[in-house]
Image (cartoon, rainbow, N blue to C red; front, side, top):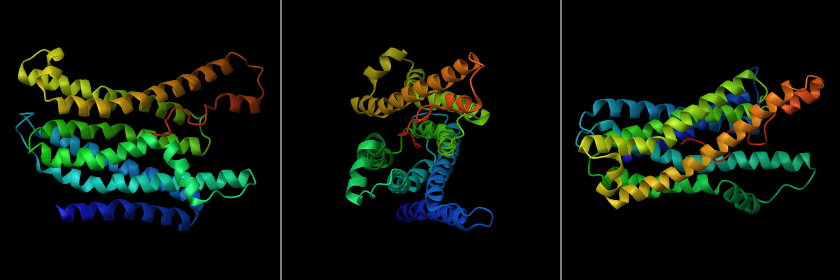
Length: 292
């Protein structure tokens, strides 16, 4: 157990540092510290998402009995991924810190002290930080110890929620470099909308449906047939997903309505054309959604 935790503790921060160093010093790149930090954090999140969803697919496909069947990868990947959520709180703060420094520089103001930056970060990213803390302090012990080796299928399906993370990360990078007007941004936004809805919003109703089919009971009876802790956990995990999905839908609506409005006014100048297609600051990817 400790060796797997140690491996995750080395892998995710190590990948972040290697990526940042490469982007800063590679010939032909030599990005700024800010750009290297932000892109590297998105890269690590995407790698973790690919690993988690791959593990989830293997686990779900290997469990014929969705309650009793076990797969060694379930607990192993949970242990390996726990350090990621701790690292990601730090990585998100570093992104916030460098963006704050750039903003202060553009406004020709004094750089904010660290204490002010931390409090601003916690206010801005409160829901995501809370989500990560809950994953470490609640979901980790529940998944490894409380389950007592049962329900690996459900754990594997929940890993598949990470399928939406790479498109979220790409969307944030495109917004960072002001590429909201590109076809890639629109295609990625549509992909993010679909994957987030299927893998994060519909995930929990599907788990209830799968158990109802296994137990031969109607879907509406499942909440009354499972322990209350399962219902409470599902509600707590699903609530932020629904909120983040509403932000994605709102941003996507603004983006495509602005695009259609531009097409209806062909007399717009080139500079106005580019501006009119830009969504609000968070585009159609919620600032809180990072992975996971």
